[in-house]
Image 1 (cartoon, rainbow, N blue to C red):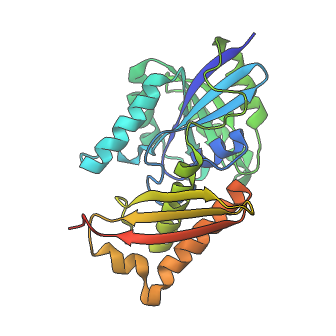
Image 2: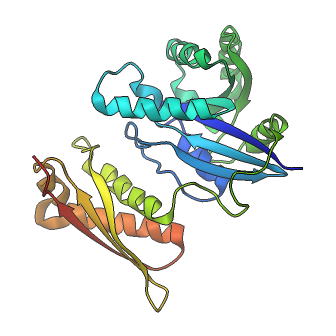
Image 3: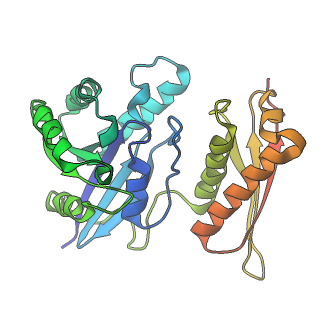
Length: 282
């Protein structure tokens, strides 16, 4: 008897959502970066556990919820779309950045959809357990939270207990995805994301979040090496010298970092070529 359950993974930037989803599916499908809202759209991870297919939406961070900026409007659409499609909500925090006021505001907002909310304390390997219990007691006052879990997504602590609880709440249903599928995104999307992640890593404060990566070639060669050509699409010409760097050093670092990242995921030798396009830039 097959079962199914859909979950939205929600929380502030850098609380560990992408690490957890990558851990659950067994491969890197969501980029991990400390910068705000590196997950710009909802990525689906698929975990087949026992007879249950768990569909996990890795959502953009909730840091933008009060913002009225146009860019953040799209993030809100992606977040609430994932929430609407889910059966259960998982709200995750970095235990070292515990803030009751912020948590209460987020949970109260999420409670409007009237779905079960699981609360996860992540990175518990970095704190004394005695300091966690008072926080749980405080959060019990928020009536919308159904259950609490203590995990370390990075160290794989508490994951089995979480999975068993999720599986126990699944319902009879045909699986949506095939047994060997781990995400709704293809290899081209994931390799584009690797390059976007490398750009975020090396550009520090001058981060063009509206940079887009376009794939021009994704071809396996006769020797099984993978040749990839990507274009970094800019909407502002002033980004170009920043991305290139002095003597082209920055784009070289971006290419090398992304190429290694892709190689680790695809498990083939990668030949990555990058170019910058400012044709439609201001």
